[in-house]
Length: 219
Length: 235
Image (cartoon, rainbow over all chains, first blue to last red; front, side, top):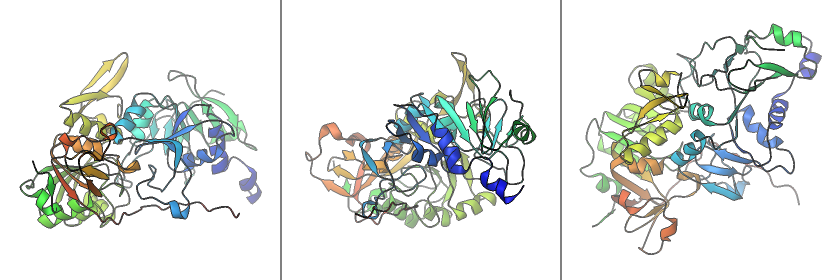
């Protein structure tokens, strides 16, 4: 691969977030994970009303505050300082997860280390290495209406991440609806159907996706 | 009955014992009961099991009790940003029961509401459900999770009246509310104590029945884990 390929082929992190943002609908209540998913907030279409939920107890996340408005009592789930909107509300953690587990949140966008062809997701633990904990990820994948995973198509070592069976401890079983990578988009209409390749990033061929994917999917 | 105590140490008098279970409010360093944590550290009580979403960071929040090795076990959902925690955990000096964040909040809420357990879809098919009873409801699998009844709850509020009615501020409410109800006794530390009648009864977040002991913790030097800002556009 030449430098030119690296620059023009596939989607950047921002473009992956922009692609995920196309799944937003007017009136949606949405929870965004940490990393690339957070960037989705910058891509909400003009004129569309989308309310962002923060699982530490807030609906209606505003932009980062100005320097003189920073408030230690006002943070998002990533523990970053944020601001409130005129429409914001606050609640406790039990009420926050009642919203999530009760199926009231329309959409969540999460990162992942692995996704299986059956829609299993692993994104919280690497045994012996990463022991930070699952936070709210298991609740989100169990309770939110639509689960979108945004991740690099292959790992830093070049290993496929969309695979037949997850090798890492699961976050949820048979829960993922859509996968957006830097190369392609996969979707399935329900949790009994296989994933289908529905879109290729600019300059990416179906053959390249096939080469870098071990999961079974429909073309 | 007098609920207001002059210090965290005085408020904790008679409530601490080795091997106790503690429920602590806070999310990261937001809304943590700092004065009570300091006083628990000073008391030297040990082998504590703590139900808290996070474990503080090195030398802040519950990280202080980890450093002095007063903690036997943490029941938490996320413990990143804490090197001492990682060291003790990998060395086998500290037990950890990783609990999904919503499951932890509901376990505290349920424990405080007299509910011994509840079924949830969260964690089904993962290590979290291993060894736990599962049951089918309407064609879907749920796992049984137990409520948590703590010996003592420590929480941080914004304002309380002298009778213990309490309100929180912004996202500092988080786990403070469910943690408060989980304990046989709850001690709240607040930024301001106001006369009875000065808080609107319609706007109380935590009714006085849960707050058994109250201290004024101010002044606070609230810590921020990740300060993120935007720039004003030039006029």
